[in-house]
Image 1 (cartoon, rainbow, N blue to C red):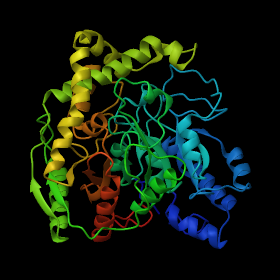
Image 2 (image 1 turned 180 degrees about the vertical axis):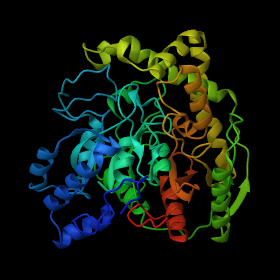
Image 3 (image 1 turned 30 degrees about the vertical axis):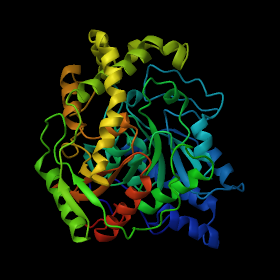
Image 4 (image 1 turned 60 degrees about the vertical axis):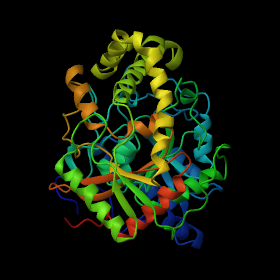
Length: 474
């Protein structure tokens, strides 16, 4: 049973058990369980924990039950999941985590939703996110937050915080997530999961991402095992894959080739990494050296102005949503209902609007600067975040914008680089805090190098397994 500070639904007494998605697929193929049994187990688990976790904004249980009784194709056919509530699914509203957005149903699935559903997964509903995915914690101005299943006083991360909480708590083994500045990797890090942000263009883009001047958004999932993430990548490529890069293919374990690992301990912002995070990254470097890889401390050849460029771009997105929300999100959009972060970001952009041409130039240039790193190394090892998971309230949008903005810039100082560069990066749990919360490291690669990251992640997972909450003994 979980402690009073934990919240999970793991049990060996239902069809889901303690299994990941790959193990459930095997049991489905053998006829040991049915898709309906998995769906009913996931619904029961969701009902058990969601009053505490606030991770589900729209359950679609009856539709999921009906879907489970039909025949489906795909590598994950019959596996229950959730889709993030910034992604259109026909007949369901897309609220974007915001009270400013109305409840009109989507007329059709987004292009990415069609791609995602090609895997055969059964959607049980929509998962929670902070307003427009701008925050790094799933907290709201007037609704309960999504806490961390490992310790309910702490943040589950964001913006894919609802999906991460549901996977970490054992409701489903895999859930949709997307990442415009760390929104797959941050909640994965907070909740002890695997979170891979794919290369830009690897999958079909969402409609909004496709029109951005610099597309910083990638679609993916959060999982409890490296193999689930690898199988998801392979499954998605059966429907579509980017034409301008080599396929990821079917990655099933480590590679024999030893790699050159570039070690990064502090971010380009000058924000020092806290002791527990630094110790976890350094310990991971020692594990990699013990496995025969070479590790060398390096400094990123990225201009310090990148942090300001990304902040300005972040503000521009808020400004565009606030200004053109009626056209982008529906005629009932009400910007007066947005929170302090959304409003503050829009104002921040307006004050610095004159910098837009230089900012866009800097955002586009960073891909070339980042590519230079891989002349001398194969993979980067770094923190995901500059400090361990904060308590709820630290990143609350109830705070003044100035305070929240500074805290976010200090906390989220490693992940945005890969969004601007369009390159893959993977969050992996490799340690724990004194309070028992996960601490993650980030593996980053050159454009199109997801296969290399997954192979290295497999190797780390074998060398130092990280137990999920159902197996956690303190």
